[in-house]
Image (tube, rainbow, N blue to C red):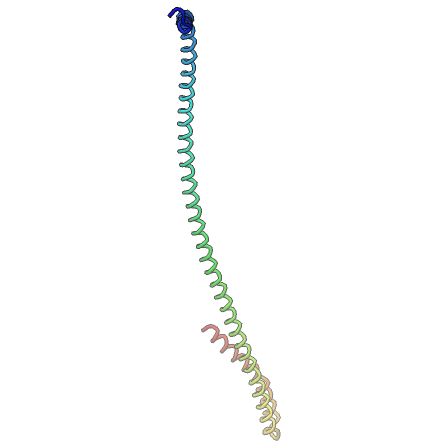
Length: 175
């Protein structure tokens, strides 16, 4: 046993640990404790960072949901405004078409009145000329005073007819 090398290696190992073991043990445990403390600190920091990240995620999720809700509300308001604008444009177009139609009717009525007036004036003028011609032909042998009276009546006839037509047109227009 004392002659065997293994015995001396084992003995030197035991003596080495007996002499330096306490110092080594203390250094190793101190290093391990420091490492454990560092790991605990890192774990605490990681936990804190995780909580902050979870809080930031919740905030971001909440903000995203609010933004989506606002976007949906904005889209809905835009659709309502577009429908309102389209309805207003339709009403405006109908009103413009109605005004143009009424203006066309007014122009047609004015043209009809002008044509009627022109026909009446022409008819009155022709009638006056015909009466003048007939009376002149039949009364050429008669009295000079009768002729003068007749001429003045014939000359006043177109003005009287125009005045009569204008009063009829005013009566129709008022109705």
